[in-house]
Image (cartoon, rainbow, N blue to C red; front, side, top):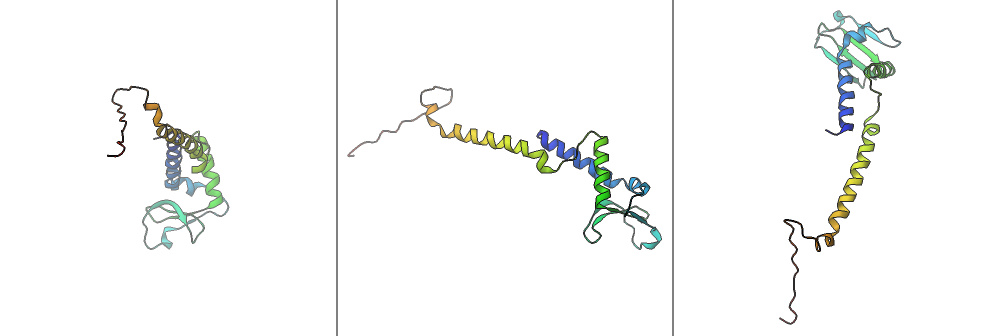
Length: 140
């Protein structure tokens, strides 16, 4: 795994852990958040926070059916702090991977130039390299 991929994986793993920690979210008192009583729910399933298009926020459910809603702005703020406590500055995929993609592109371009330069093999005798010069007969 390349360094950028490791950094992205680490950030995603920590974000998954934060989403799964419903106790953290249930103890927060932030504007727009709510915790719904389990008696209001009919089918408790239990799951970590996940994005809800209809709610336009993050929704989680404990095993006993307690529903937790976290607005996007609150989620982002807590995630930034959570990652910072673990020494990670939150960045998106492009911010992490772009330098490595540019490095990979430079390497690929250099390799293509290397592959196009067939003459480098003509005068050097490297073990295992074979150069066959084809002679064409005129008038045969």
